[in-house]
Length: 231
Image 1 (cartoon, one colour):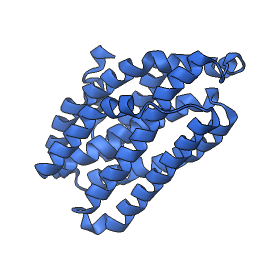
Image 2 (cartoon, helix red, strand yellow; image 1 turned 45 degrees about the vertical axis):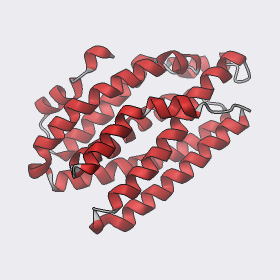
Image 3 (cartoon, one colour; image 1 turned 90 degrees about the horizontal axis):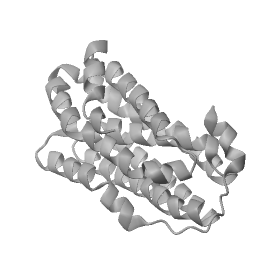
């Protein structure tokens, strides 16, 4: 893989690297913080899964602290203001759906889109990370698959009643992911993460999740491609 070859050439202490890292690190910290809040919120209505959701929220908080440590290790201050703006649209869409009682949309945003976005970014980052961050991120990825699995299982069990809302939620929210990838592509490249690899990994993981829930191969292709023209 090209990323593995690039690792020795990355200067983790360069100003350019630290500048890009301040935003990437902030994004993963904010992403874990958003996830923890979202799972706590979902626990209020998905009462059959309250304990599991609160456990996931605690896990996300632990991940956030791990990524904060990664920043401290490189003596980088995360740009949290940038990160909060980065997640604004997905955050607002989640809150709106919650207020309107659209739990299926909330689960698609958190358990599918945000978790898949995280898994893809971490998978591409691990081969080019500094040693400290690599160990932290490898541990986080294992947990994230559990989070993705929760959403998959719930949506799979409720697929027939959830299908129409899932398709609408996908149409509204997936294009935001491509905008987010574009926004972060330049900084990711400084860290040795190629945009094409990020897009590919996201599409594979997201497509697999849609298939596991119950969509046909043709439907998965159609849903996964929505908004891709902007990527």
